[in-house]
Image (cartoon, rainbow, N blue to C red; front, side):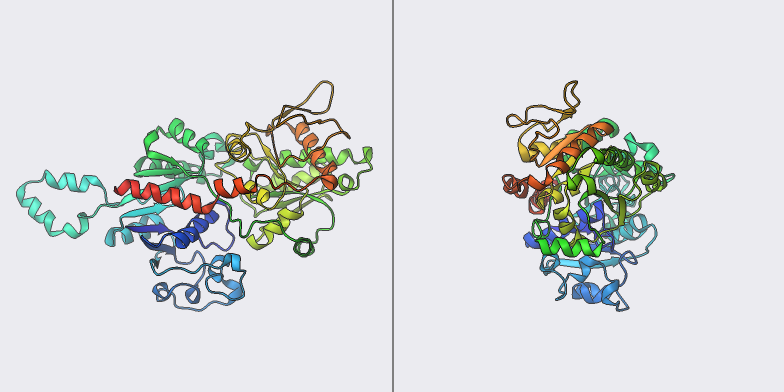
Length: 480
């Protein structure tokens, strides 16, 4: 089987959600699949010239040699002795790399023409779009109904119409359908149109969560049998608890001196950061009521590049009186994230809408506790790891927080709790409750114990190797 892989996003220098998904899936395919052949399509200009760090088959497509510092992390890693072993990828001989031009309209011009001229059995696009120009069934059926004269003419061009490619696309979420106001014009219309077209026209659709599958059925009326749920994974070689010296090194790099709550993700409205900053301001306002040093000195760190409509988020710390306690770190490289997670008091993941939310798995894999919004994809993660509907908290008339039964009794009163659970789900817009739950994590941080009981479950249920096996099963099912 010859599989085409759209890697136009995989080697971005500042990778986020779909870029990380593309790269991790590609690396894992290279690690475990020696049976199938892969033609990996790269987008010229999206990563800079990288000839000395690609296989020989791709080097002829590049004309200049970059400096080491200019190369994206994932491509520096290929055979680079200076890169961490966890990042190194040795591309096997069944992987062929091909640079596709032009840079603009890459999918609809470059990729479409390339896969038309040199067809593959499967074309896999890891994010919400498909070429309009594709090899489809109607070509063969239409030619069968032509007059004999035109049939002879059509047969003359049989190399262009004889092989049909199957198309597989991954849809990560349909946030544009539920939160249209949180996407910029005209991108929100393009994203909706592209996602809808790709989902309807692809031979198979991969959804990263059951929630996304339900949305595809509800919003786009996609047939259930056509959608396959393949959760994302976490790279346990990279995302693992860091040593004290590693944590201190990263804290020194970002000038972090105090304990901190951490957020990881692109700075954009649907991440619900204004709510988090306001909840943090309520938490800071309670500092005078306690002698707990961690609570008195805790900061909020927001790690992620600026996305869109972020101005109000950047102004929120001043608006809520915590500008001296909130720090925007900007984009943080993958190699620094494990230590940042390991050193955090807790990871806050307050998103209003997600398709999956990989930072939750990364944090848990590093031993960092998580407070996340109570939305369907987060509940899926919780249930799969902990075999429980989720830690859902609500306010009580008698106590600031009351806890529903979770694996036995758990006191939630201030000063009396043992708050050692690894992950908690909170309604995304309940500001006071977010402040209370974060208070519990912070106030118990110094006496909390490491959690290890679910690490094997995390590795077995959310690994890139498992994601690759499921993805390959989708490919093979289409051709069987």
